[in-house]
Length: 165
Image 1 (tube, rainbow, N blue to C red):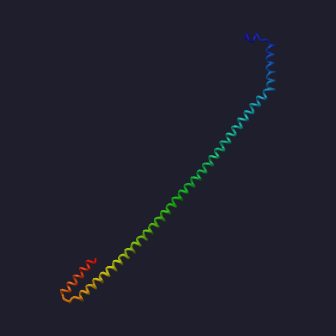
Image 2: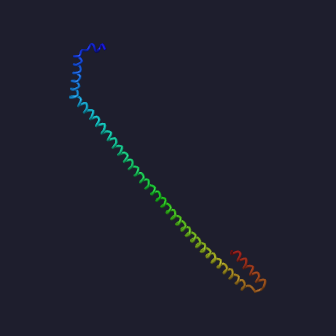
Image 3: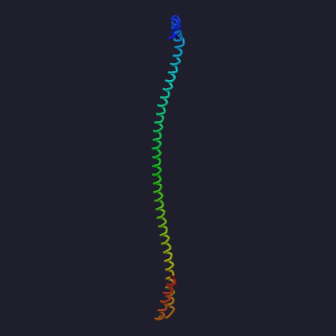
């Protein structure tokens, strides 16, 4: 209260008048610039937020596009794998079929070879039997026909047959 006693009414009035004059001058000359700067800053901040939101939308769109492309690539990869497996199975079946055909050819060739060798052996055996029979006939013709002689000729013939085998 003592402070109020020191002030006079004219000083208080001068102070109030100075304050309003300063307020008016500040409002007229400075206030608009300060408010303009604040408005510009507010607008800049708002535009930055809009850019951020647009970037978020673009990122989410790109992410969705990326995921859809990855799904397509994954589907294509699975399809290629299935095709490769199927092609492998076909090649396997062809190889088995070819191997079976080759084995059959080998078996047929082996059978033909065995038949050929058997026929060769039979021919040789026939030739030997003919030679033995001719030898026996020569022996029979040369020797006198007696029972002991006949028996000996037959025994010789049998021995020759055993030796031939």
